[in-house]
Length: 332
Ligand SMILES: Nc1ncnc2c1ncn2[C@@H]1O[C@H](COP(=O)(O)OP(=O)(O)OP(=O)(O)O)[C@@H](O)[C@H]1O
Image 1 (spheres, helix red, strand yellow):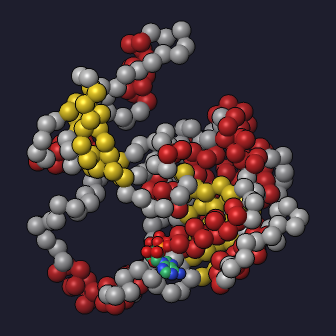
Image 2 (cartoon, rainbow, N blue to C red; image 1 turned 135 degrees about the vertical axis):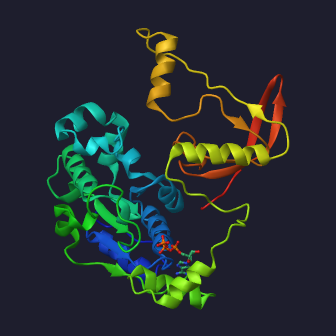
Image 3 (cartoon, rainbow, N blue to C red; image 1 turned 90 degrees about the vertical axis):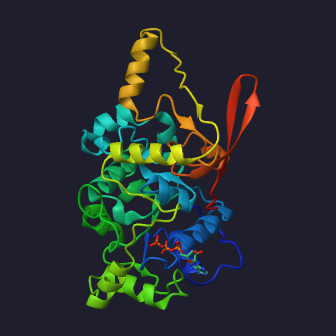
């Protein structure tokens, strides 16, 4: 941390304690049950450290997690353009052939790295991130000298692949067994029954009454706002088509337009490559009221990161073209 870093006035409690540790170049891992304010705390810390003039990189382990904390995914930030595949490729190849120059610049500039929902990040990814940072910053200390602040709850979701992040060497090197534990639950405070049930489930101490209560909540009459989880993309696509058909109003079809910037490939080949390499729909159909999710960080500079959800409000006519107008849910 630059000598003489001055924290903004008015900080208190956990925010102040964590900011002081960061100024002392100590990594922080904040944990606690669902709704204990981990993301809330991160947001306050990020604001305070940025006000103190520090360069703070903010990431989540998924698009939605990144959205909640006001950042981008850790994969995007580090320039792992092949996603998790870049964890298993040789380090030299990833550093020299995969990670774009812009990502290397971000990694060199960062003083603090914040990652939310660390519970779903694998030890393998974390170790690769550590190696990449050490290499890009030519510094052999953990994370190349970037001070890390991680938040998450290992009793919620496990990483989709690999082992828990705390199993990595670099985790032990930075945190040992240290953690900042948040114990006040802020969410569901007005529903003590649900809160206590969730806290028991989290540690596998659910009772027969808890299971009976959950079973009693099963229904076939779902509200329209219910979120559907499916095991296969085809099921999700079919459900999405059914819901879209239920909306009244004219269906407007859009077509993706591909542009070639390299002369060595034909338009047909380029389009085929794009179709194979992305799961973006070539001819999406929208109606007023349709829910959309943002696929990439293309609109990040406008405050809309990957994972944001919006609704089509209306269509504007511009000659023969119809331009959709969306309203996005803001987590800021
Ligand atoms: N110190 C606080 N004072 C007032 N409200 C708070 C505080 N901390 C958190 N909250 C509120 O409690 C809710 C849950 O907070 P938050 O999402 O940060 O919890 P979390 O621990 O990150 O949850 P999860 O484990 O589900 O990700 C939010 O609505 C947040 O605004």
